[in-house]
Image (tube, rainbow, N blue to C red; front, side, top):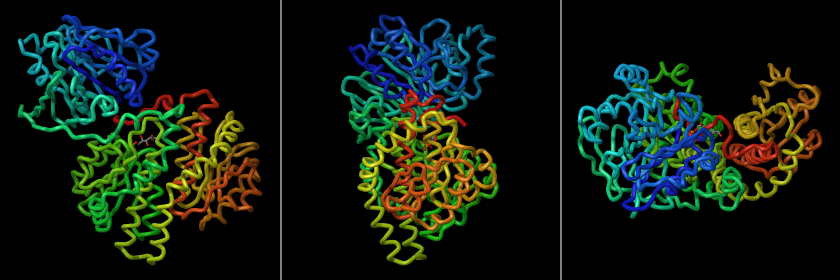
Length: 606
Ligand code: F6R
C-alpha cells in the first residue's frame, strides 16, 4: 500500500508541487519515498528509504528540473524497505519511470520471461516488471500509449500506475485496477493521485477512474480509455467539497489530536444522513434473513457495538464478523437471503472487498458505510451511507470510529421504528440523547484532557494493559485496546469482563493496570464483581464510569468520570479517554502518534 502522485504543467517546474502533494499522501505508507521528472530529454530519479522529509533532507527533491513528474510514498509489500526497492522504478535504458500502488500477482512469471529476454532487474519489487515490459514493447516499435496498453493487459493483480517516458515527455499515462486513482483537473496543472488530499489546494475538480481504465494526462487535457476494448470514455470532473483546511492540522501539534478534537463537528455531520439511502439500507436490513456486519480493525469494533444496538432497539440479530475470517467462517452458508453491511472508513480495505466479492457472487445483498466518496465500497454496494467525517490523516482511526457509530445508531433507530418492537418513548429517548452527543463530546474532551495526560505520565512504563467491559462496553474495551496498542506499542489484552475469569486473570499480578469500562447500565453490578476479582490479585483498577458513581470511585485506583449517557451510545463517549490516552502515551514515550510503525491507513493487501 502506497501513495502515488503525478503532475504535468506546460511550463512550470513540478518538483515542489509534487513534494507538497507527496507529504499529504504520507499517511498511506512511509517507509521510503521517491520522485522522477523529465527535463531536456533526460529522466531524473531520486529515491531512498525513510520518511519523506528525511529522504528530502538527504536528496533535495525540490531542485529536480522538469514540468512533468511522478512521485511515490511506499509501504512495502514485495521487497523490504530500501533504496533500491523504493519507487520510481526504471527500465534498463533509464528512459521511463513507474510508480505503483498495489500488488502485481503474476510478476514472478513475467520477471522470468523478461530476464530470459536479457532485462536487468535491480529491485525485489513486483513493480519493476512494468518498466521492463514497457521497454520490451518499445522494441517492437510501439508508441507510448500502445506499449502501455499492451503492458497493462499482461498484468494481473491490483494497481494504480503512473508512468512518464522521455520519448513523449508531455504526458503521464495511468492505469487503475482495484486501487484508488483520481485525476485532478487544475487550470495550470493536471494531477493524478491516490487521493484528492494530494491536490485539493490546487483544484477541487476530480475525475474518479474506474477499474479497467487507463488515462492519458497532459498539461491541458485528460483522456480515458477502457483497456479491454480500447473504447474512449467520457467523464466530467466532479466537485469535491474537501477543503485544504479540512486536511490540515489547524494548530494542533498532530493530526491525531486535531482529529480527536474535531469529533463534535464530525459527529454533527454524521447526524445528517441522506434519507433516501438510509431508508433503503433500513429496508434491506429488515428484509434480510441472515445479517452480517463486516469490517476490519476499528470498523469491526463499531460493528460489534452495532450488534448490541440492533438487537436491543430493533430486536434484529446481526452478526459482527472480522472481514478476513468471513469466507472461512460463514462464506459457505451465504445465499440470496444474506445481507451484508460492510463498514470501512477507507472503503478500500482488501479483506473487506475480498469477502464482499465472494458474497456478491453468491447473490448476497451488499450494503456499505464508508467515509470515502468514490471508494470501491461505494461502487460495489447496492446502497451505501457516507460518514462525512472528512479525510482522516492520523493512521489510527479516531473521528471515523465515532462517526461510524453515529451513522449506525441512526440506522438502528430507523430499524426500531420500522420493526416496532420497542415503545415509542424508548425510541424518542434514544433519538434525543443521540442529538445531544456533539455537545457531550465537546464537554468530555475538555474535561478529561488533563486527567488523561496525568494517567499517561503515571502509566507510561507499564509492561501491558488489560481492558475489560461488559455488554456494549466490550466494543469500547476492544477499541480502547486497539488505540493504545497502535499508538503506544504497549501490549494490551481486552476481554468481555465476564470471560476474564476463564483465562486472562492468570496474567494479573501486583501493579498490573486494568481498565474497566463501567457506564451506568444493566452490566454495572456484574462488572463490580470482576473489578474485585482483579483487585484481589493485585491489579490497579483504572475505572471509567459515571461522574457521580461514588461506589466505583471508592474501589478504583484511578477514576475518570463521564456524564450519563444512553447505554447504547456509551461507546461514543467512553472511547474518548482512550483515544486521548493513546495519544498522550505516544507523546510521553517519544513516538509519532500520526504514523505508528508498521501500520498504514488503508490496508489494501490481504
Ligand atoms: C485502527 C485502524 C485500522 C482500520 C482498519 C480498517 O486505528 O485504523 O485498524 O480500522 O484497517 O480500515 P477501514 O475502516 O478503512 O476498512
